[in-house]
Image 1: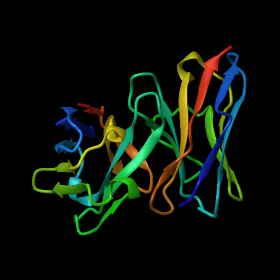
Image 2 (image 1 turned 90 degrees about the vertical axis):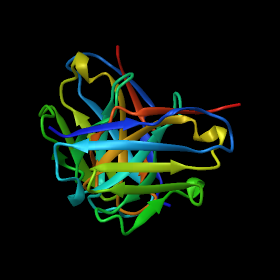
Image 3 (image 1 turned 180 degrees about the horizontal axis):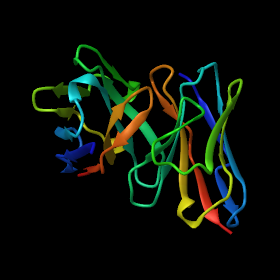
Image 4 (image 1 turned 60 degrees about the vertical axis):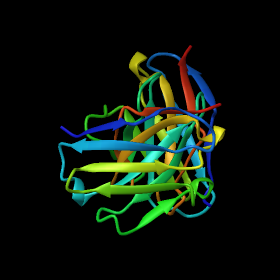
Length: 116
Length: 107
């Protein structure tokens, strides 16, 4: 059974950093692209970043470029999202997803609140 | 960036009714279109991929179609468990973009 379990969320002040993790199991992690998708409270879904299966290439939405870094450790079957210089508009539930030109499996999500 | 215009924003329908939701892409995205259902407090779940393929475990009353750059999700006979918010997604090119969502309620 495919499982994606996010962790690392919480309350953080504007300008500070936070690192999310996503532990994957039930599939060969190193064979798949992965992505982060977020959802602000009462809002729709928004793609944040993607990474190739080897980790050699990464892609970001413009609003997080230069502030967020997606990475992975295939030996640990874990996906990461390092979030720096956080802003109030980054407040959202962050989902880890497996990518197959669509997002076929999603984690339960982790809440990130950016507020002073 | 590719824009996905989803309609309607909300929809109220009766049990057993046929429901159709559409997404219009701002440019050609081929079949790189997928549909998701999100129930309150839950993660989104994949319904349709490749514009027309049914994801594993999804009831056959769900179907997807394409006409040019317009994509549709059809629920042939609405059930109580189908209530939620539906989103389309284009994964043709980054930044990948979702439609704004359609909130489906029971009449």
